[in-house]
Length: 475
View 1 (cartoon, rainbow, N blue to C red):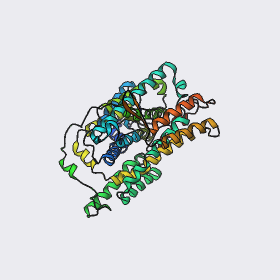
View 2 (view 1 turned 90 degrees about the horizontal axis):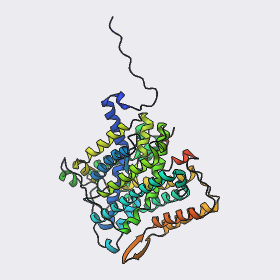
View 3 (view 1 turned 90 degrees about the vertical axis):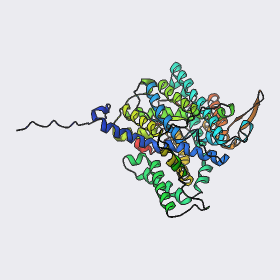
View 4 (view 1 turned 60 degrees about the vertical axis):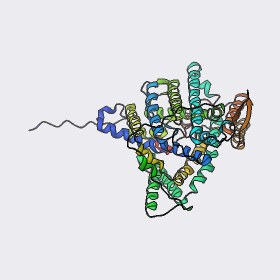
């Protein structure tokens, strides 16, 4: 009789060391994380390009591009893992919280921005991202010195929730404008996202935006091949960028530029994105059963996220943030090994050196982006509402109503911001900056604070601006 075959390994619980699965499976798991972050991450530079094109009539050929964005996401993720002692299985992708800031800077037409082209304007926006990232370091230092509970008293959901709501609502007009280029494609993209978000199974439930973009784009290719045009007579897809792109090349890195107006546009958004980070850390901790807020510590994860964001902005990329989509993959796959996330980061970096790939992405019809934005911007605002609801903000209390009401009026009413001059230099405080300052100030001086960080873990972990279905991230 022959020897008995060795029984296959059985994995009853979460896998914390993916090397036991073998490298082929590890690579596949890394690709799965790449797909999870991909649609949302590349959507940010496409959206931002649309803002600057609408404002200046000029495409961003350099600066905030898909290639630079992918490189910064991959490199930022690896840097984050270094800062967090390689313990936290988080992927850093493009932050949607800063879209309103990019849109505002694209529309600036006073002071040094008067007549400025898109490729230069975006660099000042990136300079604002650098400073916003550095604010993470200040929060990390304060948390390390005084503890997270004392800090969070000044940034409760009654402040951060309405600010997130304002971010989404301020972008609503942009979604309608882009979708109106071709309502058929926009509605298809929107419908696919809804279908996969509600009825999708497994991995498909976690990547609804990617599926919406892919299926709507396939329809656009078919319509374009059949000679169908947009209602205004323009071609649905222009392949010129694909044919002229090479297969291998360096991403178009450029150094950020700095101006106080752009800094005041971007810096207050860090309040929302830092709360997003804290929510993501809470969610990842709950998913994998480890308290990452204590070990390696929230100060370390904030340090990694902030420096990754600043480095991205310095070289012409968007702000980074820990991604809820990849938290969903952790829950789906039960593989909690950070090594798999780092493989996905390497894949993202490799893709950034393929200009032909970026060329294909640049052919995306504006109407598809409009359809995606239709869901995305509304979802951002709805998440702000969720932030308030799940953290049990008591809106029967006058102080909470006053804070939320003032934030809404400031965030949506000061459409042109407030411009003033210091030392002969014109500076503009945007609506969101005014809303953030007013909300934090009122929360600090009004009596009756009723929020304690950690008292409601479910609420704390729902503070992030998630794009995928949150059901997939909860046990």
